[in-house]
Length: 264
Image (cartoon, rainbow, N blue to C red; front, side, top):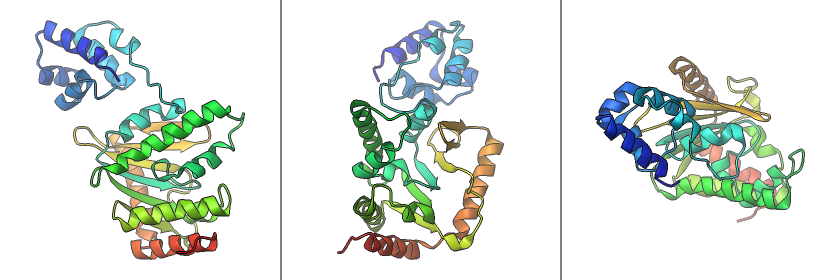
């Protein structure tokens, strides 16, 4: 993202005689959020842009000319992708697929191959690149802290076939053994649990309240209502409390990879 949008925001703020903190207070945002936008490190949400327009009396300029993100991603996931890159802690729950930031290339391609209508080869390649780019947040050894809660169905469904699944599970095992992520499996034997209805991503930040993202078929939504986020966090905590401990989850991942044909 270029800083042109941020430069214009800074010019309007200074022309109004406002400090970053004063603008943040008027727009119900944090000072560091304003700073990130002005520096070109962050794209404001549509609601943020509307609040900035109102605070600066700029009509709908900031709302109308939000920078476009050229990454290949579903429209409903665009806002969540931006937040994912900023989060200091991410807690994922996956019901049917391995979470995006943990996926291998061949697993990604297998998931994308089920789309209807089918993607063109060129579009599929763009989507794969975007998905793999997301995983680069794990290159930092510490931030974000990542926990993944996986329904056992994620392990048992052979997405892409035996070899692809073995490779995918071994990739997760290596991340766990490197202590880069924590993974817990919700076993089939548990029966019903509070997260059976949807995949969930919970995100925390240094300078703004936590959010939750839920997704279904061709739809997804970022939730920032404190009451709703707290309810989703509570459901996650309940499911996590009934999941297998880390060591047992790791053993199950290894055993399942072996069943798919991976041998040390």
